[in-house]
Image 1 (tube, rainbow, N blue to C red):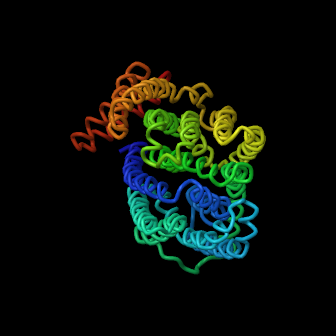
Image 2: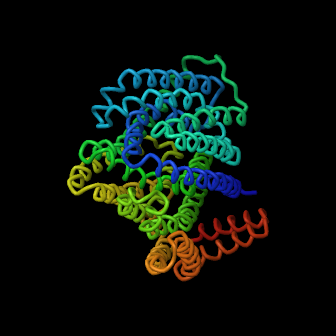
Image 3: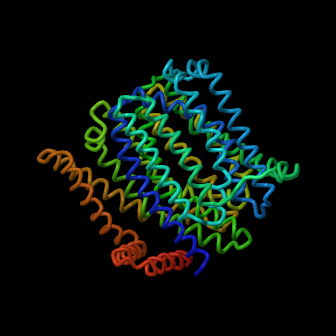
Length: 503
């Protein structure tokens, strides 16, 4: 079995796990959102502004570092654990002490000050899980990682649903995050079978600090980029507007988690292994861009087309203001498959300082675009963030070209057929739903429009991307027969086709 085939199989397991998580999380999201409303949802979303910053140093950057380093010793693992735990504990204590002034600064009021200390308890829990999760990623154990994440999602959802049903309000969201972090820690530790120790030397910590410097910087700037909209919306438009924006963002993130995040993990792992084999890196990269676009573009645009009926039906009429935000966000989200793979290539090749530079440019663009768009409302903010991504594409594409040889044009057109097909599908789905909703109950109209849209996309894909359509046919047929060997053969065939010039 080829290296790409092994990674593709890992991605398949990862996506399967994400499907479980998506179903459970979306069901929970619908119930909890209806019960607590946009205002409380917006207040909870503000916890990410403060907790997210410390998570970069306590969990995200250390995981990335352990995955990227060519060689790691037991001392590196122990040093990572204890350093991450120290940061997590200090962050928890600091946020608990500063809860009141932070709540006033962010505009979250007494509710934010009340929940922030408990919400910040996820920091030490996440830090304890850093090494087990990183080891699963480093060794490409994506099936095990998918199982861990699925179990954590189920436990989290059960906790959130129970508390929301009993009237706990925003505390149900806090409980979900605590349950997710705790379950991930227990499950990942059990699966990875790694036990912490004290065996380490000073150079193990300094090695990590030196390697982490650019990683921390890049993630820190990305944090500012991601949280600036929430913070500025809260200050300018209020917590309810934050809730509407955050619901749209949560739906977007669910699709990313399902279909694009596994691609990032697989490409980063594959590129890190094949750093000296430029052809192999190029092969993995272009195939993953195309496959991710084929799967994610119809989902993004389909959600946008269904949103006018889907949102009030599932979440309630009070969430109707989120519909245009979702539609704008889903339209610009079509860039996500290529952008995520680009970032995975740069980081997998050990160019964290390049990633840092792009992130700095990105946050500068965000500040300018946010200041220009805020007076026009939350929909304009969503559009501004989408424009920011488009403006960053040429810079990322040029960096990837230097590393892999993939031209800017190849990257820009990697998902062109899927996008064209999905755009036509979205238009047809929206028209069909508008007509069906006039004669049928909303759930029936949604189901018919969604099924019809999927069939329409499957047919139109043959016109704009025949090669992708053939691969989809082979994969679906193999899955129907439960023939995993045939699934892997189809994916390997896609890889060979993608590596040919002009494919």
